[in-house]
Length: 181
Image (cartoon, rainbow, N blue to C red):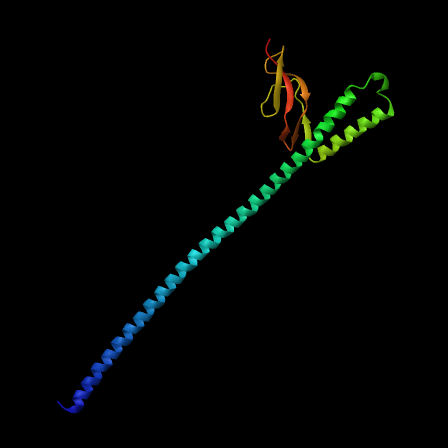
């Protein structure tokens, strides 16, 4: 074999090794790109899941804050209203004890108008008294003070009216209930 033949064989062998290395490099690059794309897609899916959960958590937070705001407003309103209810009770007692001969006087009418105005204002914020006499006793709405002769479990008399704020009892009615005797 001549030098030229050996060189050609060596060149061919080297070219084959270069081609093999190039193919391996191409495959490696392809594998690397595919692996990175797969990892990137996996990371993107994780981020989308996190974003979706964060959006749901935020929406729930907004709902909870709104609900808490309504509850807090109701709580504060109920506490303020409770302080006015004894005044309403006193005005009602005063009007109930006015003798008939002075019931038509202007000052009596003024007290009556004051009471009606106060009740109307309370009603505009959702405060209403509820009827108890003749009703069956309900522990959610009534506080039994004593019993008397009458149909069992039926309210006979009311010491103090009960009030609710948007269907939530803010003051139980204090009542006398029939004992069934």
